[in-house]
Length: 293
Length: 74
Image (cartoon, rainbow over all chains, first blue to last red; front, side, top):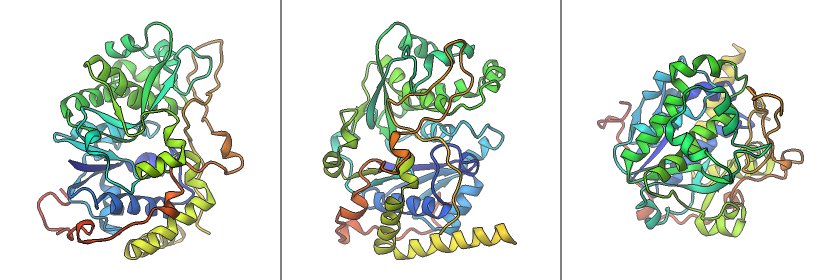
């Protein structure tokens, strides 16, 4: 199984998605994510654009065995769609893989059984599309966006809770199914019929989790399978004992700006990978120099 | 201190995303975990940055990558 990372730099530059305290800490996180996973995977692939390759490959010299610049195709896309870079990367895979977010650290190998699953992800999440306030605004999208795939409509029709999957990691052996799901998500964002309606959305932040995390469960279920999870319960990853048992870190949301977490991140990279830490610092200094010159 | 970047979207499952009841929203406000306010939110398994022992052996030290190999930079 190969490990895959993706970096579409446009949302990163526009501060879309969850945002790091500084570029320096973002680089440290990328360095640690790749360096740790490389202990478990001999094939390490990066899917990015020219700017991402310049940063992660040329400047940081992270140990990727293969680099694709497929995400140059997203140059003229709305940076609000930060999940598109991931979906393009999922769609590109033709062999069993695990996509690892740049803020995820695999201290241990993933369980072999999980890696042999048709589709797997980090952990399940539940939501009620009819709830007044929900992190997954499916109904709002359904009321404003003209084209949605039938599998979406079938998944959200009716009442009750639905599941989605947190995609800090996403992978599986059925790359055809995963590519089909990713293609549908991309089409929802790119479809010409949807263009004018999407343009009326000021912030599409929550729509990203619909096309990435809800659609994954919808397509997998429609295909007669279930997404398997590293953490079977929704609350499991937030239990420190279970995170320790899995050897899994995901610096989601505000953790990217938490002073103690960032200090620990810097200390660990400096201790285990001093050459990488030095390159992160040098790249940051060069970036600052360019800003002031 | 490194320059602070703008704070953007932060996610946490199950937390509310306020919007109007009157018409379909076309803008979703960012959702912040309550811990955002007091920086108490540590993410998932962040303690492992301090605590997880890494054992280095021949098995865990991968061979260096040849940047001239096919596929690299492709």
